[in-house]
Amino acid sequence: MKSKTVNNKQLAATAGAKKLKQRDPQYAPTLVKKSISITRQDIATWKAAEQAAYNVQMPKRTRLHRLFKDILKDAHLTSQISNRRLQTVGAPFVIKDSNGKIDLDTTLQVMKSKWQQDIAGHMWDTIACGNSLLEFSIDKNGKLKVDLLNRENVVPDQGRWYPDSDNSNYIEYREMKEYGNWLVELGSPDDLGLLNKAVPHVLMKRFSISCWSELCEIYGIPPRVMKTNTQDPAMLQRAEQMMQDMGAAAWFIIDEEEEFEFAQGVTTTGDVYNNLIRVCNNEMSLLFSGAVIGQDTKHGNESKENSSIKILDKLVAADKRMCETLWNETVLPSLFLIGVLPEGLQLEYVAEEDIEKLWKMIIDLLPHMDIDPEWIKNKFGIEVTGKRAPAKKNDLHFFQ
Image (tube, rainbow, N blue to C red; front, top):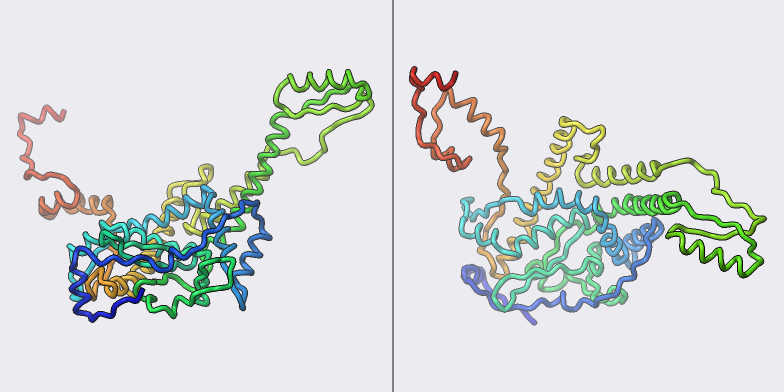
């Protein structure tokens, strides 16, 4: 379907309309869905997927992004990503017009929309995954809809979209007329994202948990051994029945002439696995939070936690600056071209105030300066009715 060419005045007029003309997505529906084989992943799998992504002639990121989806099942990794991601996606912002003044109506309109949350989430995901290719469309109710083109099918370093990841046919999306308006690309074409660095730590952690589980199974409920004459069928059958009736522990039967004993190894309660799991968790925390926050309950302290939180705050501030740039240089101009928003708008994240620090400053200032009660009410929600009358001498006994 060909898009109509309109001038800026027509677009500005369209932006003020409540309902836009319906436009179905052109690329997202062409995706050929695949059944994903769930098999055990290891370091060799990761290296092969990474090599395929770096292939010069025919790069493919299919296996790598499938591996990303698999490692996101790790609870610790998910929590670290959410701790950082949500602080940007849910951050307050304002929309300013071409004169630099806050457009309150447009700000509220954008803030309440679902597509704003979708776009903001896909923006931040470029940090984790490296790239996001979005397609805008208008549903039958005249509302903007955002579709993420499956990253498994996108090769951003060559600008290609593969409807079928197993096929060699592709679309050069940067050459399409929809690119820059209905098709919007976010992130760096050459970046594989932070998740690629997290893969080995998640895989080694899984290996450690699996080995620890096996240790618990073997030594938690030791196997039972019975000696009998295995050449006598009646005695052997009787022994098997006895072992089956004695519980759920592993068991086996050996001949009277045979011996059984556990192999002598390093005596452990699982500390070796626990230590490796902790190292992997710490590496994932450093990768996404810049520090280990709230995990070390044995050696942790308040000053250490406060320092770690400040490091995370700096990362979040950098994420907001990146998203601000993407909104203003890529997304908002595209939304203007398709008639969703007026021209010349700028998005700006609002710096959040430290309420506790501000309240302490107010307490220190009160003995020396008068402060507007209306401002106190708006800022802290405290109803100020007036100055307190000085206590009378007769009332002093109440304070004794």
